[in-house]
Image 1: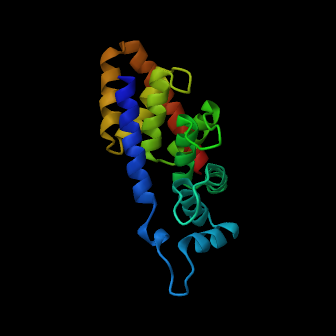
Image 2: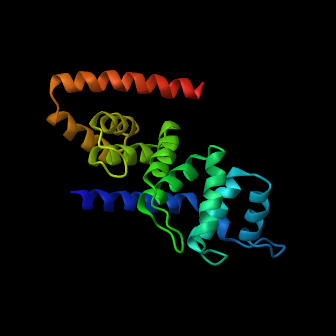
Length: 196
């Protein structure tokens, strides 16, 4: 079951990447400036969207040789500014350990960045955290946290989060459900207070 869940998670990540890499990033302007050069200039000026786009270009080797170190650097710069897709991508990279010449697998960083993205409401990050907590994947196994994050993602229409949450509900006792509801209320309040 773990393998199927990981494959589904990878499938969704690839879909997110394709959505996040607009075609205009790959274009060349009338002045002959490549999108890579333009993104690099704007990223150096501190633009989070440009930093994220530049990270994607380095990550995929589009317009420049593929370089995981620069990709991680620019994803981090954008994520630190609150760019939700950069936070999700960075958390996913640390979770799966993907990177040439760079050892990326770091469970603490994976949970940190995925939590940042999940708290901003990104359903895929919420689902990923739920999965990590349910199976003890890079995070300590915690069914309450798993249920909470699955619920948050399911509220946004995430099919697999709803399936996993409902499966967990069937296995929980009434006292466990009450405990999860109490934790959910506390976490909702914590997230809402951060947003203010």
